Image (cartoon, rainbow over all chains, first blue to last red):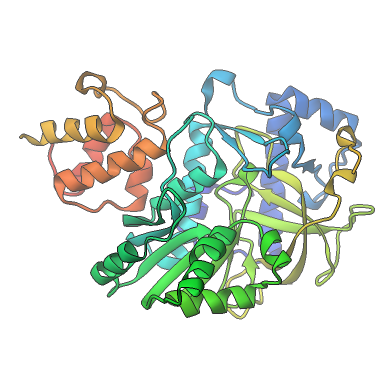
Length: 358
Length: 79
């Protein structure tokens, strides 16, 4: 049976167990593959050139290397139906990914993101602190993942306060005032992993100040590379964030512009979780065979959401490992995993058209 | 101000458009009503009618007319 979005939205987003999930996901991703082949010529050409087996499971379906979205404009709907072109933030000097979204895809992304977030914080919109600056609206048609992330997350909050001013300076007075007004109840916080560290936590440490949030839920996303360079791991990060901001449940999450909506959220045990809408498969970078649990490899991410572009099965350039499935002490079903970040010399592997000298 | 006037005014302020652009307007139909504009609009509606909308309704509010229907849930009638 194929997965039906409306049915999934009625369920707990972490309810599906291994067998049932694998069966449903296989059916759904298989039809998505057929659909995208029919509606995206480039994708069809690419798959025709590969030896695509029609195996029983989604493990056998063809993966697209994410970097293809930087090289090609891939979409499966008529051009005039595209309402939004998402771009990835991409580090400087690199080409950005372009993701083409129609109304249906935008809507399903929002609905699923809401389902996932609200399973952690409830459906009520909470007072919200954005640990970032209010981004100016520049070219709105091509807006960056950073701006989109903040705007997208704003839906879960109310009375939004931006903790950094336009010069990226921490607004200590404003923050204290905001907490005096809203600090009695639960508070939602959102920001980018490194920005929070650099402009909020390090700054508060420098100034020797701390806030005393009584009950907060912090969601943060973004790369760990710069933090690793400073030898900051997630335990250190969480400890020092709590030291400066107070009693927070901290949820790092993983997601990519190419699969917005079906994000992977870290639970209270520090494990990233696949939901009913998504899955992670770890691949051996040498032959792309499936790695065992607790074996490091390249991350393949699948999502049932991409309908306007062929991004449902992607090979990332991130390294990770599966920690377990259906048995996390937090009670959520599905696989849970750990990420190690971008693999070194990512450009030497992946699609043959991307050969670059290091 | 009637509820309808307030409603139109929220679109005018939230999206920074003219009142004559509001009727029949749909999300993403004009550059002003993108996700950034949308959250401004929600803020203006919430302030104008002193309500707090649920996240699902924020997502579903994808046209001028749909908004009128959604606001009924919050006890607001727009004639």
